[in-house]
Length: 327
Image (tube, rainbow, N blue to C red):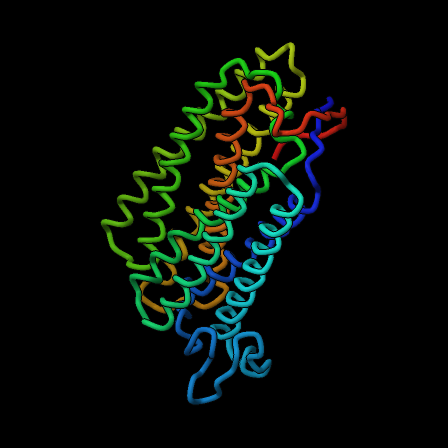
């Protein structure tokens, strides 16, 4: 199978991918902080422990950083946040310098703004010691992750020429993917509500949305496979749709298993006690895989949208055949 590649500059894509990869441990440590209730383990934001040490964020003493699990998780989360911010800046600057496409600049600029807003929200959560801001910070984290993922897809050398022939059911696939995307995010939002304010109402809403999300994602994967079977004249497009369907099924199955394990840990094992760090592993992985599933739905929606469109001049006129697939 061969996929046509455009001649977009490489560095914006590489930096966007580095930003997305750095956001993975950022999510993991953020989920751990929530899981072990360590959001206020370190007083202060940019200046830590004001009046008792006045340490700048990047120069927090190592012996204090490793003094307990909560401090370690919280400070590491902040450091990864700073790294993601720096990489987002580098991606935007590289795009301005090397990529003439207006949409590429808008998307990487939006990613930078989203990262900055999320960082500021996290800082305000600490300064105000606000549970409401903690909930909002957690609920928006996956949205920021998806904006970063969208940047990676758009800056890919396979965009949009990797789908230069129309998929048989492109319009229906786009509609289904967008619907699943919205419902899955609603499920994630309800999950954040459940993590920050454990209640029967939040649990009921989350479970109901999980059921709807599962059905939507399952049938989206099924539609992708059906579309691929009818795509005899486009081997690259057929392979892309099959790969997306496989990833959706893997992510969905993993998320359901992690959700079941998280329910067992949070409600049946821990109960009203403060979880220990090993007890936060499954809920934290549940958060991460929710973000990965949401990002895959964003990518699927983008590819379905572009699959029937011939690459315009601004997307690059020079194409070359090369092995590959889609994000």
